[in-house]
Length: 187
Image (cartoon, rainbow, N blue to C red; front, top):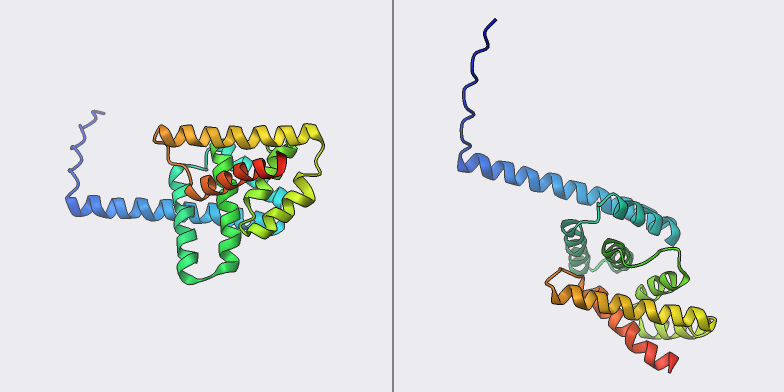
C-alpha cells in the first residue's frame, strides 16, 4: 500500500495566531492560579507546610519568572480591592516564593527560618519586638550565621539586579530593612 504525501499545513492567519496566543495565556494564567491556590492552602495550615510546598515547587521548577510576575499581579489586585487580610497572606507567600525561587536559603537552617520570619513582618514595632524576643537572644553562633545569611542574600540579590535579573522589589526593600537592623541590634 503506497502512502500518499500529506498536504502541507496551511499557514495560520493573524486572527488564528491571536486566538492561539490568547488561549496559551489563559492556560498559563490558570496554571499559575492553581499553583497559587496550592500555596495558599499550604500557608493556611502552617509555615512548615508552606515551605515544604515551596521547596517542592522549586525542585519541580514551577517557581518561574512568569509565576512570580503572576504573584505580583495578584498582590496588586488585592491592594486595589482593599482586601488586607488576603494581602498579608499573599505577601508572605510571595516573599517565601521569591526566596525559594532564588534558591538562596537552606530551609533547614535556623538562620533561614529566622530570616523568613522577619521578612514577613511589615510593621516596624512588631519587627523590633521579634528582634528583641528572638534574634537578640540567639546563641552567638546562630547570630553570626543569621548575619551571614542576611548579608549574603542581600549581596546576591544586589548582584542579580546589576545583571538585569528580575528580582522582587518588596523582597529587596524588606531585606534592606533587616540588613540595616543588623547594625542596630548586633553592634
